[in-house]
Length: 131
Image (cartoon, rainbow, N blue to C red; front, side, top):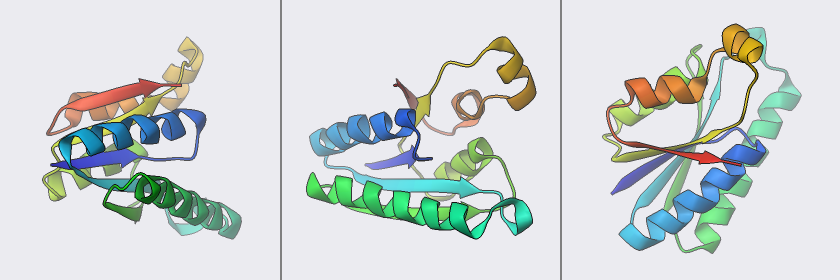
């Protein structure tokens, strides 16, 4: 089994790692953790380093739990939701885990929802984890 975790370093994504690790242990699954970055001049060097550090910590968390894990920093110029769906399709992922956080109606209108996009477009089942 292949599990994909969309990871941003937020509280919701850290909670998602924990649930995904438990699930992977039960089903002897391999976990793929991805962080989506838009690329170009949209991120600073500090943001890129922070993403790399977060992925390293996420990998260590999985490996400490005895879970086989790969981490990837995806830079396609797409939204995180689009990158998660693309990765799931391209790698025949069996289950996607995403974190969700409460947003106001105005935030949803202005920012959209990556989790909603993943839920509606994913080629496989999606588990959401609320922090």
